[in-house]
Length: 516
Image (cartoon, rainbow, N blue to C red; front, top):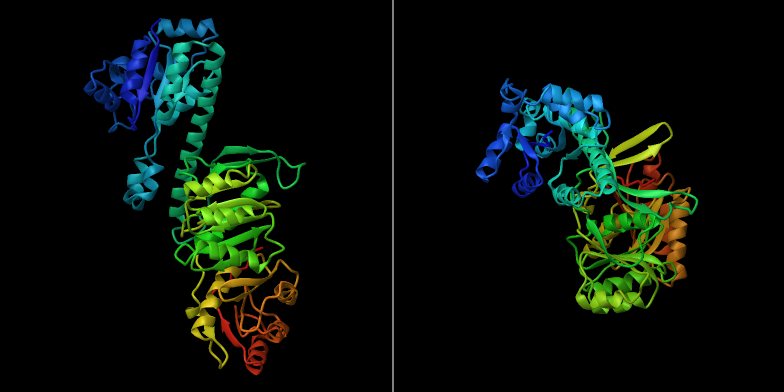
């Protein structure tokens, strides 16, 4: 009985070479009209589905492959003699390869077509998923090829005829096919559920189809297993590892934290942030990358050891030499000079990460909780201090406002309750994750004093409002002259009155940046 390969694709990348190889291996090519015309233009012979089934395409092409001769050829079990006899009795070819793409519904979600639900309806595939599902169900015998990137490995497997390797490949392709259909079905459901409630930020249906990108040695602790997943058909990763040990679960969390910080300073002067346990322990702006690194280390000379160092500019040799003076877990930057890479690679355990900075940040954030999943829009925009309301009579100087903006930007990346003290574009004290705001204030002041920093003339940022004026009093006593926070406390008036009495410039921001 002649063996057949079914071809129905909209993405014709690399198709001529793959189809020619199938013909060389003795496969009859059964094609839908578009694929048939394309292959004939390439000088390849094929048979149309219409000719094979005796059923013309109808309903403007909505029905063309939904036929027993197609689905029987895909679904017949090769290990059941009665199935194979039935195929022969009915003149049905056993289809050993199904080379199929879906209509480009997913690709058009970001196009002009997405504004027209009727156009999107016509991009909902029916015959393609039916054939893919049939072929994948029979993946023990049928190759279901949905991605042109898999053509070479399929051709190699067919030539080598290693039955065990072929079976492993068919099963892997079947999993990929089911994943593709899951992503396509979910995209359709999300699109049309959003149309039901067009003015809602969160439509009735949400979710992502995730595929494993890497397995990790363990999670936060050795007794926890872990893996990294990415969205199916996601674009390129914003980071790539150039050297060093494999990334751990905790490394990836810290990498994400430093990526968020340096991305928010993408358009500024050279900037360096040092992350420990998801919080900036040091951060600075300077005229050079080396100067920013030195200032960031100086901010907390004790805590930067073993940290994650991030830059918004490429790393050169001088910066690499400075990094090697201490122990760091990761170095993250948009690029590295050849000399810098050579130097940093001498530290075999140092993980070197090249990132593609993005101003857009995380558009949506998911977090698992008991009984469900929380979903929120990403905290993508940090307001300008120029938008803040000055609520005391004393206004800040231009230099103080510049420091205040820097402190406000950093504060948005510190775990709540968060207090950040800055002087001359250098973080000199951070209070993070404390149970009360005054605790965070006292911790930030203590850190600055411990390391001998001059607080007088500095500025402070608070990620949320002051519930009592005691935080203002402690900051003023330490020498802070300008403070930014959000409003909303029942005692805002008290905080304003105390700030006025102490000569503090108090600004109420236009936004809040709580990070639980």
